Amino acid sequence: MSRLHLLRFVDRPSVLHRAGARSKVLVLIGLVFALSFNPGWPSVGIVWATVVVGIVIGRLGFGVVPRPPNALLLAIGFSLVFGLLSGGEPFVQFGSSEIGLGGILLQLRLFGLTLGLLGLTLLMGWTTRAADLPVAASWIMKPLRAVGIPTGEVVAALTLAVRALPLVADEFATVARMARSEPPGRSPIDKGMAVVSTATVATVRRATEFGQSIEARGPIVVNEQSPRWNVSDAVVLVAGMALVAAVALAPGP
Figure 1: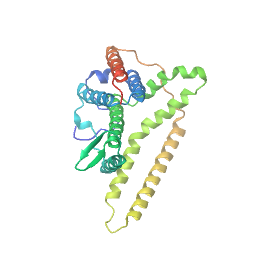
Figure 2: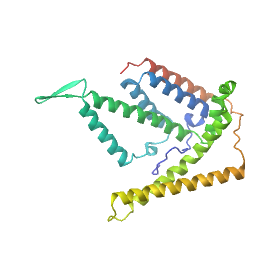
Figure 3: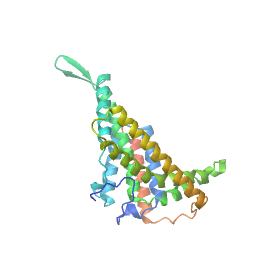
Figure 4: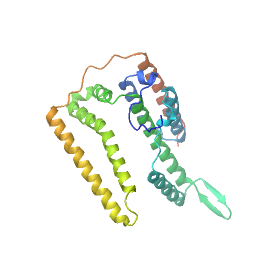
């Protein structure tokens, strides 16, 4: 587990892996819906605890957790500084000055909620094969066909997005390595222009290759025959409903 697995299936013999994609997607949708109405600190704690327990139950090992880039940590640090400067309740006495912690606490809760939802998404990606996600999306969106929504086209677009995500991540990793290997004498503007031009060329090339592949292969057809529900699906759904209820009933902000 020394390599990082970002949105890539990690095969393990666990109840999360045996459960179908439909049950996990339904639980994720329910948690997002509940968090949108009650994004308090207890709800953030429930989400983080769910991610940790999911990694343990899924026998994934904490080596799957990706290391955050330094640029992201720097951006979070700047945001926390501005949150501290914005002040707000509660106030603490620091010497002869009074400092408001409301802004920085709000920023921390926002980052905790965002990273927790990202952790839930990664957990589903580590325990679910990418090929099963379009089938689950097609099953979930079946009722939308009654109102004339072209679910087939939507599922085809999701299929392409899921398949392209690892390729795009590899391309940006390559661009990042190229940026670090730039000679030190160049100005930051020249380095930035080189990175942007390289990323643009790589994106256009990948898009052209995808277009040619789709044209040669024909339209994308998603299998409508979803697998049967099993005991693992029941366990995930029951645990997911309990988590959604816990988030909905948790104390507010």
